[in-house]
Length: 146
Image (cartoon, rainbow, N blue to C red; front, side, top):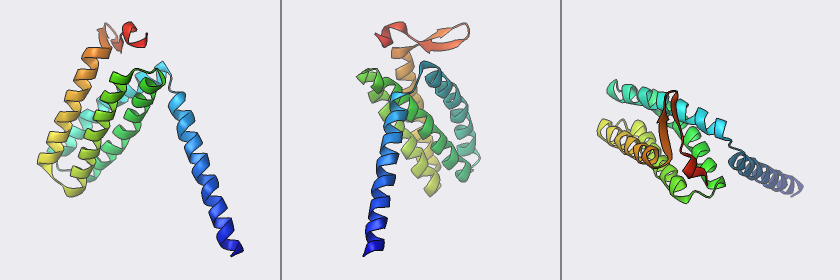
């Protein structure tokens, strides 16, 4: 009985700690973190396309995990700034990443290709609305942060 109580208390502690960590991480995504996530995602998407073409399903699964991590930062960035349209696009992109992950697990090239296309379309829509090209790459449109 005492052991069960200790396990329950430990589980509650871990859950609260994890929840607090996630909440703090969501609130602390800086513009520099956002830009780094965007750059990293551009490379991962290229890798994902190659892994689909080569049927490297395990590598594609790793790509989807990495994309999920980076897109979660992007979603947190926009949510912290109450930019609901951008946050919704990030959520839509996360759904596409989940579909890529499922496709890697079932080794379904058609589903993986379709999900990657959905991801690219969603990213393109977000870039059109919230990003602008500069000589050094892309940046957030100033109007998106108001």
